[in-house]
Image (cartoon, rainbow, N blue to C red; front, side, top):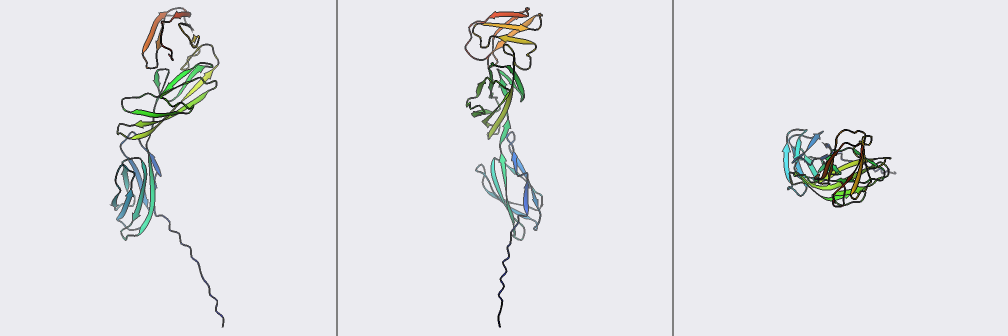
Length: 255
């Protein structure tokens, strides 16, 4: 008599019965972030063991709700281990909190919102990240390789320049600060910014002690020259449509 030995191999895979929404959150200008849970099985109340980033200690909490919401106090990766009332493991999930903020960039001494600026081909323009009373920036990294708080650019074609920096928020959090400016390059004589090419031209660029301005009107006009800090270094009025000024000595830079 012969016997046939049949061995069955059964593969078993445990699927997580808990999920979080969203999988990550971005928060910088507030002192918390929230995560929403969806528990698809098990018996309430549910027990959560939470492994946190270094800003706070690991802890355990419970909820009778199958869709609880938790407040997370700092950036980093949180790991949630979930059991139900029968001590059955329902799953492990993670949630990432990223601290990031959008900043405005200054262009030629004027702090502007996110957008575009226009220059003539061959001209230079200063783009910089200001420090406001509500935050401090450090570790600047520009897309063109600059590492300071500002960068001079002279694009020959329309180019977008972006920056990443470290940001200390009003809640003393270290966040990632991001922003960008698109510089539109046009073919024209002299310098012209902020989409006013058809109204005014200034040349030469760069200049030393003389500057000629050509305007489309012979009405009274006022010329104000400011430095990158927004401080006025020269001002005058004129009627002529084209006029050359003798500028007093001012330090080298962008005005």
